[in-house]
Length: 146
Length: 338
Image (cartoon, each protein chain N blue to C red):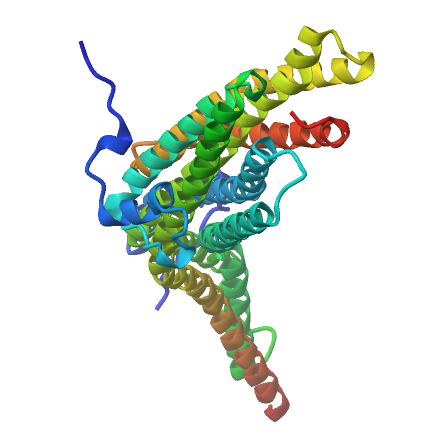
């Protein structure tokens, strides 16, 4: 028999822990979030999906069938999960943004090289046309001289 | 020195102009044969670059569209939760203050994630700019223009020669047939240069573009997760409160209940949307592999078309979600809180 793996039970990196701080201490602000490193990206994705799963389960509960106390607990849990999802999302996106930003200069250089390649192809034609034009002028000069 | 003998007219075959051997000097014949063979390879490189650039542009556009939907979905997800757990008034001053603080905290996070999504969209646009430049280069062959320019150059040389020899009766330095042959050869050379430039660019940029596509895959994954989460919650809440609840209580209002039922059954059908999202994610991951294999010549444009079909499904799913949300809004506004 196999036991389903629970993402939240794995040893989380400090950045993942920082992102989920809302579950333990709702007062933690967005400024305390650290950026996701490539190694923590998959963990954050798994954590967010896990939280979204919890949210879906809590949503499946009909609050009209709950006692006042149960409803209060249910609402509190949904609230905390919602906050945690928002925190993990920010951390996750910050990680991707940081990596993408780092990759952009190289991509922009590659784009510029393609544009330069296109320009150089056009330049060759321009040079030939200029030479032909100069020869045309020479032809006329010779004609006038003769 | 005469380098080119009188050629027979050049012929076109498969879009590549071929120079018949009968019209070339022994010196030029091997060169022309090599260039003709290489021009065939160049044609493959050009077509590959065209295919890849079209796919890359479509992929970037699809990702950008999914980002737009994800921004709305992430905010809606939170809003729906807050509406669901809202306490019944009247509320004490302390509770009201606590609620204000909680809302501001969430709003700050949502503003941040919206900004991050916007930043990612700009990055995706940079990727699209690369593929646009690749497409322009692929479409930017100057072979025909070079042929025309070279022929014009030959005509000018003849003109100067005739002027120097003193009249129009002087024989041309380069005959019309020779001129056409040289022009045709120039055409082939430029085609080869063009194909080589594209091949070199694809090889040179392989790692950079592969990395950008991998990151784009992560963006797509994050965005589609947000869409999916909102979709699941919307379906659950909406069906329970607007279809199941009124039916159980026997309080259905005919037109509204029918409309709501239709809406949320459609959302259930969008369980297929979830599959489409998963499929698109798989396709996005696959694109890295497809990219590497295209560059190695292992994959053809057909593979790209299959992959893009999945991305189109993702866009269709995103569009369907927008429609459902729009259809639901009037009903929500009129509905009593759950």
